[in-house]
Image (cartoon, rainbow over all chains, first blue to last red; front, side, top):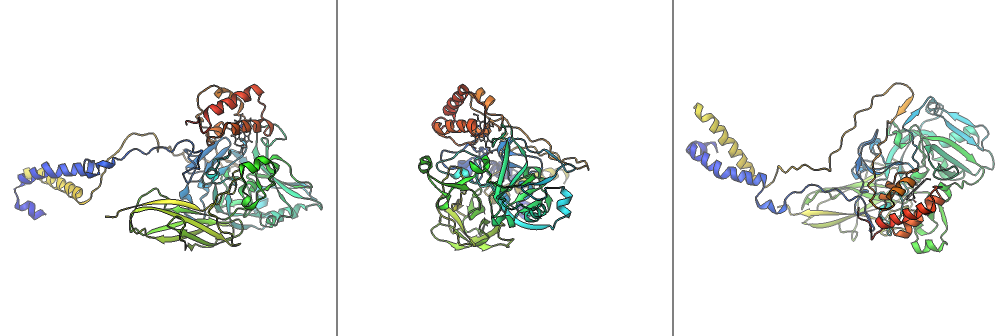
Length: 432
Length: 136
């Protein structure tokens, strides 16, 4: 090249370059060439709401917001605070605390907690009511750790058809953390549960503005004392080796492995042993599911008033494709890695399968490290889309009990327990 | 020699530009002032060493309720226990579902809302938040 310049008259080169090459450069770099057909446009914001059809996005359509101790999350509501975790945060088995979803029911939630005065009360139908301070929990009991998924009962509610009222979550109302704390059983044994007790009720720092005796005043959740899950429950003071963010329940929250998050009381202050069944709003009216196959029913059956309901409990098996997420076009022949998470409230993931043809043919994905039966299990599968076109990737998991994710949705009035096989369109373009 | 120095550099850079442009068919340089996408980072907290653990204030955002008759009634009666964003967050719902929601807030949640107000609120919700009527 340099020799070419050397051989040619400099002035002539100046003319050539200035006259044509620079023009080409300008055209090519700053527009006007063959690409003109696809003028880049400004990103358009997602509309404020979705429906009446199902939410077409993976997350809910809310705005990005920054909250104390949090990375930008997706806003559902600001009072009480409800924030959704963006899809990308699930590219690891443990969800970072700062990205962990937030869901409170009542508006008066702690901005500040004073550990000098905060106490965990064990009370009600017990031999010896006790009060535990934060240091008591850290030093007087054996510390146990457990990886466990925390998922809102209404995760993916926005996929219901017909749509139901409630928090319009996309699929980011979930997270996995390593919880460290004290066994609930040890605490209960310390207080001595009296004979004839039926349930144990949990209450936290959250308070409401509604009148006394209403669900809008207090948030109370209870579990049967003979429920085997009680042996696995932890009163957790540590989340992924860090203090819990205030929005996730600092100083301690209840961990109920395999169960939906409604029982995982945040900012726990009271463990109350009951000698009768809890009939407060949050047990008797809310968070109930039809006692039917897959806890599913129809609006018509519901209207008949004959559908028996039970309190929600364990989480059915689910799996998610996290990457690729469809936000980029992929060149044909590109070696992609499909990856995501799977979990089940029925103890562990046995198998994850992926499909690149929308669920017609399936092949096994590779499972990542096993962090225990209640943790996210990462999965991955390599896939090279052969040619340009639109592909539908689907993923389905099978849990340790042999439950396979179904290819049909559920419907119930609360919008709970969605676990249909997920699909993601991937657009593949020509590579040359 | 000296008088050739600048033209030389010009030639070289133009040549490079041309070479880049000819080798890769790409486009660059599209910028436009737009609203979405910008968000301030929060300043890191300054902590004391006492036993108080604080998250500071939680932001309150104005929900964009549709303008129309009944908006103020809804704002007055439906803001005690939660933000009216509980309304705008919902998908478009049939008028009868809205009527049932308002009844639920009164009977089950204990909202003290006079009959007149309740009627007005249901009318407002039906006029702006059903599949047929919802605009934004």
